[in-house]
Every structure is written in C-alpha cells, then in structure tokens.
Image 1: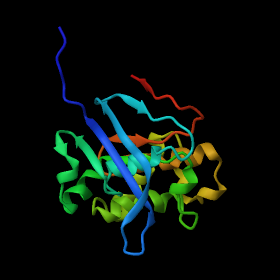
Image 2: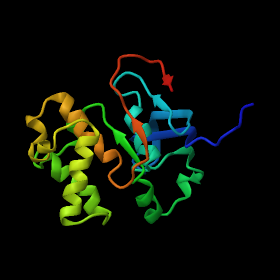
Image 3: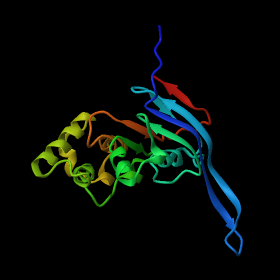
Image 4: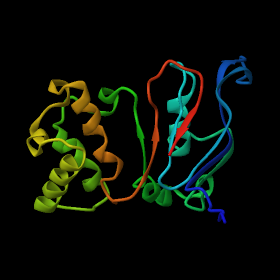
Length: 196
C-alpha cells in the first residue's frame, strides 16, 4: 500500500523571459527565454539533478526558486507554502532552508574572506549565533562535510577545488539541521537525472 505525500519542493511551469531588445518607446521587441516551462517535484530525502549545457538555465532555475529573480510565470511550492506569495520577511526565513550550490565553488566563495568568515556570515545575518557559539557552529559545519577545523582560517583561493566545493556545502544549512538544496552540477548533457 502506498501513501501519497506532498513533495517538499514542487515546481510547475516555471518560466523566466528576459527582454533582449526594446523599441524607442520601451516596448519589448524580443525576449530571451532563459527558463521556459520547467516542472519537477522533489520529495524529502530525494536528490534531483538538473543537467545541461552551460547557459541552459540551471542556475537561473535555482535563483527563481529562491526568488532572487522573479519568475515570469509558474508555480513554486516548498513545504506546502506558495513561494511566490510569500512576503519578503517570509522569504528571508525560507532561504535558511534552501540554497543553491553553484557548479563553480569559487563563484560562491569570497576570496577576501576566510572559510570561517564565509560560514559565519549567514549565522550573523540571521541573528542565530554570537561569539563563541558562532565559532563552535562553524567548526561543527566543517566537520560535517569532512574538513579539518583548521580550514576555518584558510582563504578559498588557496584551497584545492574539492575542499572549496565542500566549503560551500555547510552554508546549505547554517541555521537548521535539515534542509533542501537546489543544485547546479556542471555536466555536459541535456538529460535530466533523478536518484534516490
């Protein structure tokens, strides 16, 4: 007997068109269809990989889910909430649970900050930990992804690529121990894969 569960993340008809050319009066003449009618559902504990050529809209899809870009059309639901209907303060809370993991780890790591500072920043922004408690949480996050605690003092550009990727992962859940991630793996394929 199977029971139907509501997906943790559900995307339906997600669309983002950018204006490419405007008339002298500001009317849109042509558009770029960055994302055009994307639909998928992800259950809790499931991994979904969006795979495609560079520029096909993988990262844009992640930004739309987080509403870092506003969709042109489509529906986004996370944990039963209509993401497009959320107020800015509610979106701030939602972004504690969802994060984009970029295909290039250096694109999400500030080369002027240490790994520890990068991991501590969301804790500070969301008012979740201070002083020693913040440092302890950073050390815990590094251990969680298999890095030495001493990595907190490292600069991302001096780290190996694998360590840089792992450094980006703890930020996925700086404020909670269970979360969903929108990922953008770099693979040369136009197919979409799903694995449990």
